[in-house]
Amino acid sequence: MNTRTDEDKDYVIKIIQYLQFRHGIIFFITSKDFDALYNWWHKRIPLHIVKESITAVVERWRGKNKKIHGFSNFRYDVRKNFKNFLQLQVGSDTGNQDTDTSKEEEKEEFQEIEHFFNHYPEDLNELKEEFESIFKQLKNKESVELKAVYRKLMDLFKDDNELNLKTSIFLKNLSPELRKPEIEQKYRLNYLLNKFKIPDFEIF
Image 1 (cartoon, rainbow, N blue to C red):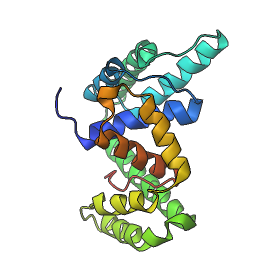
Image 2 (image 1 turned 180 degrees about the vertical axis):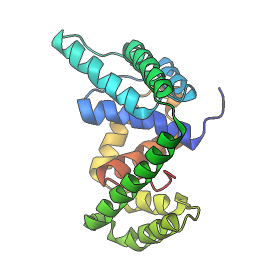
Image 3 (image 1 turned 60 degrees about the horizontal axis):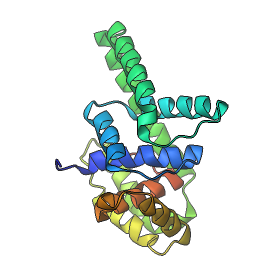
Image 4 (image 1 turned 120 degrees about the vertical axis):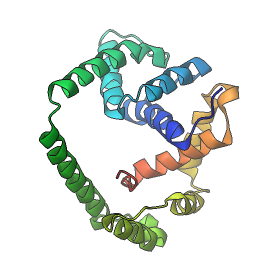
Protein backbone atom coordinates (compact mmCIF):
# COMPACT_ATOMS: atom_id res chain seq x y z
CA MET A 1 0.00 0.00 0.00
CA ASN A 2 1.34 3.44 -0.89
CA THR A 3 2.10 5.97 1.82
CA ARG A 4 -0.92 8.21 2.22
CA THR A 5 -0.55 11.79 3.32
CA ASP A 6 -2.69 13.72 5.79
CA GLU A 7 -4.28 15.45 2.82
CA ASP A 8 -5.34 12.07 1.41
CA LYS A 9 -6.86 11.01 4.71
CA ASP A 10 -8.61 14.36 5.12
CA TYR A 11 -10.30 13.95 1.72
CA VAL A 12 -11.43 10.40 2.49
CA ILE A 13 -12.70 11.14 6.01
CA LYS A 14 -14.65 14.19 4.81
CA ILE A 15 -16.53 12.01 2.32
CA ILE A 16 -17.30 9.34 4.93
CA GLN A 17 -18.50 11.98 7.39
CA TYR A 18 -20.61 13.70 4.75
CA LEU A 19 -22.45 10.45 4.07
CA GLN A 20 -22.88 9.81 7.80
CA PHE A 21 -23.85 13.29 9.03
CA ARG A 22 -25.68 14.67 5.98
CA HIS A 23 -27.58 11.52 5.02
CA GLY A 24 -27.43 9.37 8.16
CA ILE A 25 -25.90 6.44 6.28
CA ILE A 26 -23.39 4.16 7.99
CA PHE A 27 -22.20 0.86 6.55
CA PHE A 28 -19.22 -1.45 7.06
CA ILE A 29 -16.31 0.13 5.18
CA THR A 30 -13.97 -2.36 3.50
CA SER A 31 -10.56 -1.97 1.86
CA LYS A 32 -12.41 -1.92 -1.46
CA ASP A 33 -14.39 1.12 -0.30
CA PHE A 34 -11.19 2.90 0.74
CA ASP A 35 -9.63 2.09 -2.63
CA ALA A 36 -12.62 3.71 -4.37
CA LEU A 37 -12.26 6.84 -2.24
CA TYR A 38 -8.52 7.06 -2.80
CA ASN A 39 -9.06 6.57 -6.51
CA TRP A 40 -11.21 9.74 -6.50
CA TRP A 41 -8.44 11.49 -4.59
CA HIS A 42 -5.76 10.43 -7.08
CA LYS A 43 -7.93 11.70 -9.92
CA ARG A 44 -8.23 15.04 -8.06
CA ILE A 45 -12.02 14.96 -8.16
CA PRO A 46 -13.22 18.03 -6.19
CA LEU A 47 -15.07 17.28 -2.96
CA HIS A 48 -18.15 19.22 -4.05
CA ILE A 49 -18.48 16.93 -7.10
CA VAL A 50 -18.33 13.84 -4.88
CA LYS A 51 -20.83 15.29 -2.38
CA GLU A 52 -23.29 16.32 -5.10
CA SER A 53 -23.03 12.84 -6.63
CA ILE A 54 -23.59 11.14 -3.28
CA THR A 55 -26.68 13.27 -2.59
CA ALA A 56 -28.14 12.53 -6.05
CA VAL A 57 -27.63 8.76 -5.66
CA VAL A 58 -29.00 8.66 -2.09
CA GLU A 59 -32.15 10.54 -3.08
CA ARG A 60 -32.65 8.42 -6.19
CA TRP A 61 -32.14 5.13 -4.35
CA ARG A 62 -34.38 6.14 -1.46
CA GLY A 63 -37.11 6.85 -3.95
CA LYS A 64 -36.78 3.23 -5.08
CA ASN A 65 -36.41 1.87 -1.51
CA LYS A 66 -32.91 0.64 -2.36
CA LYS A 67 -30.18 0.50 0.29
CA ILE A 68 -26.69 1.97 -0.14
CA HIS A 69 -24.18 -0.72 0.77
CA GLY A 70 -20.82 0.65 -0.39
CA PHE A 71 -19.01 3.54 -2.06
CA SER A 72 -19.06 1.61 -5.33
CA ASN A 73 -22.75 2.62 -5.52
CA PHE A 74 -21.64 6.21 -6.18
CA ARG A 75 -18.91 5.42 -8.72
CA TYR A 76 -20.96 5.94 -11.88
CA ASP A 77 -22.39 9.32 -10.81
CA VAL A 78 -19.02 10.59 -9.56
CA ARG A 79 -17.34 9.64 -12.83
CA LYS A 80 -20.13 11.16 -14.95
CA ASN A 81 -20.32 14.41 -12.97
CA PHE A 82 -16.54 14.82 -12.93
CA LYS A 83 -16.44 14.37 -16.70
CA ASN A 84 -19.12 17.07 -17.11
CA PHE A 85 -17.19 19.32 -14.71
CA LEU A 86 -13.99 18.98 -16.75
CA GLN A 87 -15.84 19.76 -19.98
CA LEU A 88 -17.28 22.94 -18.43
CA GLN A 89 -13.82 23.95 -17.20
CA VAL A 90 -12.35 23.60 -20.69
CA GLY A 91 -15.25 25.51 -22.23
CA SER A 92 -14.81 28.51 -19.89
CA ASP A 93 -11.01 28.58 -19.76
CA THR A 94 -10.00 32.21 -20.33
CA GLY A 95 -7.01 33.93 -18.70
CA ASN A 96 -8.61 37.10 -17.30
CA GLN A 97 -11.62 35.21 -16.08
CA ASP A 98 -9.39 32.89 -14.04
CA THR A 99 -7.72 35.87 -12.35
CA ASP A 100 -11.05 37.49 -11.51
CA THR A 101 -12.42 34.21 -10.20
CA SER A 102 -9.35 33.70 -8.01
CA LYS A 103 -9.72 37.18 -6.47
CA GLU A 104 -13.42 36.62 -5.87
CA GLU A 105 -12.75 33.26 -4.20
CA GLU A 106 -10.13 34.83 -1.94
CA LYS A 107 -12.56 37.56 -0.92
CA GLU A 108 -15.27 35.01 -0.16
CA GLU A 109 -12.85 32.90 1.87
CA PHE A 110 -11.88 35.85 4.09
CA GLN A 111 -15.60 36.50 4.58
CA GLU A 112 -15.99 32.93 5.82
CA ILE A 113 -13.14 33.38 8.32
CA GLU A 114 -14.49 36.73 9.49
CA HIS A 115 -17.93 35.15 9.95
CA PHE A 116 -16.28 32.46 12.08
CA PHE A 117 -14.81 35.12 14.39
CA ASN A 118 -18.05 37.12 14.47
CA HIS A 119 -19.85 34.00 15.72
CA TYR A 120 -16.96 32.48 17.63
CA PRO A 121 -17.94 29.36 19.63
CA GLU A 122 -17.60 29.77 23.39
CA ASP A 123 -16.32 26.20 23.66
CA LEU A 124 -13.19 27.28 21.76
CA ASN A 125 -12.34 30.36 23.84
CA GLU A 126 -9.04 28.79 24.95
CA LEU A 127 -7.89 28.76 21.33
CA LYS A 128 -9.19 32.14 20.18
CA GLU A 129 -5.87 34.00 20.38
CA GLU A 130 -4.15 31.28 18.38
CA PHE A 131 -6.80 31.32 15.66
CA GLU A 132 -6.60 35.13 15.53
CA SER A 133 -2.83 34.95 15.17
CA ILE A 134 -3.18 32.44 12.32
CA PHE A 135 -5.68 34.71 10.55
CA LYS A 136 -3.31 37.66 10.90
CA GLN A 137 -0.51 35.60 9.31
CA LEU A 138 -2.86 34.60 6.53
CA LYS A 139 -3.79 38.21 5.74
CA ASN A 140 -0.08 39.10 5.71
CA LYS A 141 0.50 36.35 3.13
CA GLU A 142 2.68 34.45 5.59
CA SER A 143 2.74 30.67 5.76
CA VAL A 144 0.56 29.20 8.48
CA GLU A 145 1.14 26.14 10.63
CA LEU A 146 -1.98 24.49 12.04
CA LYS A 147 -0.69 21.28 13.60
CA ALA A 148 -0.18 22.77 17.06
CA VAL A 149 -3.62 24.39 17.31
CA TYR A 150 -5.30 21.28 15.88
CA ARG A 151 -3.52 19.16 18.49
CA LYS A 152 -4.81 21.46 21.24
CA LEU A 153 -8.29 21.35 19.72
CA MET A 154 -8.36 17.54 19.93
CA ASP A 155 -6.91 17.58 23.46
CA LEU A 156 -9.66 19.99 24.49
CA PHE A 157 -12.31 17.44 23.47
CA LYS A 158 -10.52 14.17 24.23
CA ASP A 159 -13.16 13.35 26.89
CA ASP A 160 -16.16 14.59 24.90
CA ASN A 161 -18.83 11.85 25.11
CA GLU A 162 -20.51 12.64 21.79
CA LEU A 163 -17.24 12.69 19.88
CA ASN A 164 -16.00 9.50 21.54
CA LEU A 165 -19.27 7.72 20.74
CA LYS A 166 -19.27 8.75 17.08
CA THR A 167 -15.59 7.81 16.76
CA SER A 168 -16.30 4.41 18.31
CA ILE A 169 -19.15 3.78 15.85
CA PHE A 170 -16.94 4.88 12.95
CA LEU A 171 -14.12 2.50 13.95
CA LYS A 172 -16.50 -0.44 14.45
CA ASN A 173 -17.72 0.05 10.90
CA LEU A 174 -14.20 0.00 9.47
CA SER A 175 -12.57 -3.15 8.22
CA PRO A 176 -10.01 -4.21 10.94
CA GLU A 177 -6.96 -3.53 8.76
CA LEU A 178 -8.13 0.09 8.35
CA ARG A 179 -8.47 0.81 12.08
CA LYS A 180 -5.27 2.80 12.41
CA PRO A 181 -4.52 5.63 14.88
CA GLU A 182 -3.97 8.18 12.11
CA ILE A 183 -7.38 7.42 10.58
CA GLU A 184 -9.03 7.75 13.99
CA GLN A 185 -7.29 11.08 14.67
CA LYS A 186 -8.28 12.43 11.27
CA TYR A 187 -11.89 11.47 11.91
CA ARG A 188 -11.89 13.22 15.30
CA LEU A 189 -10.28 16.38 13.90
CA ASN A 190 -12.66 16.65 10.95
CA TYR A 191 -15.63 16.08 13.23
CA LEU A 192 -14.58 19.07 15.38
CA LEU A 193 -13.80 21.26 12.37
CA ASN A 194 -17.29 20.58 11.01
CA LYS A 195 -19.07 20.90 14.36
CA PHE A 196 -17.62 24.35 15.09
CA LYS A 197 -17.55 25.46 11.43
CA ILE A 198 -13.82 26.19 11.65
CA PRO A 199 -12.73 27.51 8.24
CA ASP A 200 -9.85 26.08 6.25
CA PHE A 201 -7.01 28.47 7.08
CA GLU A 202 -4.73 26.63 4.63
CA ILE A 203 -6.92 27.34 1.61
CA PHE A 204 -4.44 29.76 0.06
